[in-house]
Length: 311
Image (tube, one colour):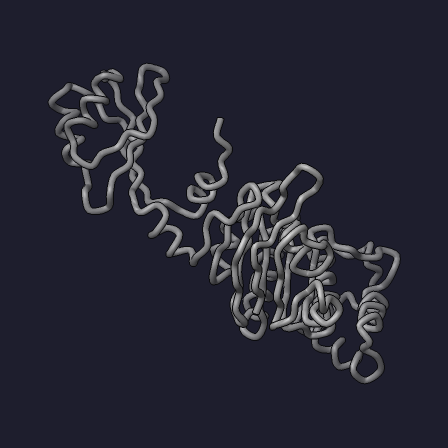
């Protein structure tokens, strides 16, 4: 279990992380989302002990990381965003070097090597120089280094960045299989990948936690309304205002005018479908509806809403 309590990190006058709180239980795969500069990597580095917090605590399986840093780091496998590999080494040599640092030698190393080669599908490149390996294999090698000591917790910062679609699927399946027996905390900019991989999503913005829940909970609880996009001809802004005033439950989000058409974005509660009333109003007003599309909120729209900077 990871417990983050009132965790903060300042760089001079810049408050990168602002007194955040969350807990992650064993057996959970949690996605950690945020825009660039939101505080994701800083938070992960504090959880792993690579950065000292300005304030607050990180408790890992009952141990305070500031008081028991080495004991906690023995339980964590960490893959940073910039995968720290030695390109001039062979895969076998790097895994042996990493294992030796962890105190894993002899028979224990051979057993660990067999395990990570199987888990990360590295048998075909075990004697290959790392600089000659593809981006996908380099990510696998980084994962193998993070897993060589069989940690209870895996923390992965952007593990699928730069991978092609096939490689992303392979890493996803690996992470999901590992999540059956480990706590996995991963960050990613690829929202679709997060949805397909994790059990729970935490969103951070400007150093603060702005959402925490399953994908279904975020969509149902944060944005329960349905979005409606309509393209209209022969209407006016005043006419659209009248339309909104006429139909109960219909909210106008935005309206743009281009090439003689009005593009209006509406929102309405799921149990108050206004499309038939909107159509009837358009016919009565001699408008032409050239397009009408409804869609419920997805993770991307939730993420954009929660992390969009106000202009």
